[in-house]
Image (cartoon, rainbow, N blue to C red):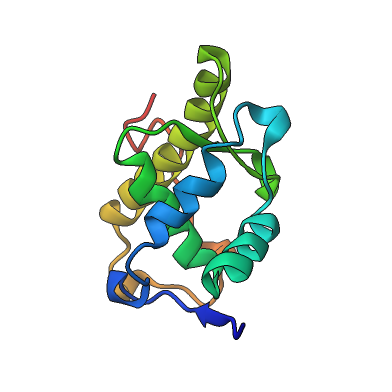
Length: 138
């Protein structure tokens, strides 16, 4: 079987059925101890459906599954995907997951304060780094 590599640019790039196929794989990975690696997911997708997802495509399909309310978590540093078996597993995942949003919001706030073009300096080190208090987070 020829394997087609899916490169994500828009949702149109992801073949119909991919969400269902990924769910059929991870629904059997209950609990962190049974997590399946992203490589493992791609091997199964290639074997049974003839596709392999790039990192962005896989993240997008995982997001779609999560948006249906499925507690599909991942281990840190790409260690694998699994369905949370306990509230504790879900809380640990949720803390890590939400911290990404906090980091993004903090960065957006710093950028919102903005440095006008005329105040740009030759070196990044010449710029004063705003403190968290200045950005209104503490």
